[in-house]
Amino acid sequence: MRSLFGFITKTPLLKSSQRIDPSRSPFIRERIDIMYEGDRLDDILRQVRQIELGEDTFKVIFVKTNDLTGSSKIEYDERRAIEREIGLHIEGEADVNRPDHWFGLVPMEGRWYFGRYHKSTAVWLHHMKKPRSYSIALSTRVARAAANIAVPDPEGVRVIDPCCGIGTVMIEALSMGIHIVGRDINPHIAKGARENLAHFGYDAPVTLGDIADIKEHYDVAIVDMPYNHFSKATQAAQLHILEHARRIADKVVLISVESMDEMITQAGLIEKDRGAVRKGGFIRQVIVCG
Image (cartoon, rainbow, N blue to C red; front, top):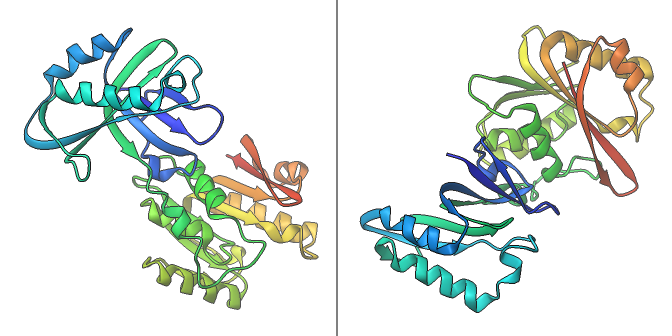
């Protein structure tokens, strides 16, 4: 079953063979798992007659996108009329408030698509209200994106955040079912991370100590180094973290506010991919290393 992904970004929809829970990503608002498609709405009307829900209830959502050839050309009243018409062709009882099944419909690039509808719960917005925080911490949105990049599929993956700060990345990862542990060299900060995790009901260890003292091996290490921009951390200290991140994990996702290309190479890491996000007056780089 293919999927349609609805994005908050300028690209409204993306076809893909991979199915992603929209609640995992801060950039995906909704998803349609395609059941039927056709060149005309009549093609969809004919196909949805196959759906037999018995006594179950359902709701049909007309998904509006920025596609200038699709739903953006259809006015509100017409979209609601199409939803009702689709509903009349489905065997089951319509329920606009608490349906058992949600279906989505969208025209895009000259074709119509219909399927199971999933909407993001935006849990990361709730995580913004931490009891302990500080101004240079990652935003929950960036932290969630980094966790997604680091661990696309959490099944059987062991992850460590060896410079976890107040636990922003850990909270987002744990909310997505990722097995992650934390560590920080600062006892005050580590205590704050434990308080934040407990506040949201997450139970994961946050140990105190240097990354060099870690003996276990992990599949992934997520390393956020925001203090590079705000403190007098030496290049030797930064290289120390990178070298040990390489030692303790097969994959390293590095988050930095300054260029670390030479240091990444010096640490023996190989860059696989990168992206950038702006916060205030500086840019954070998210770099995936092998």
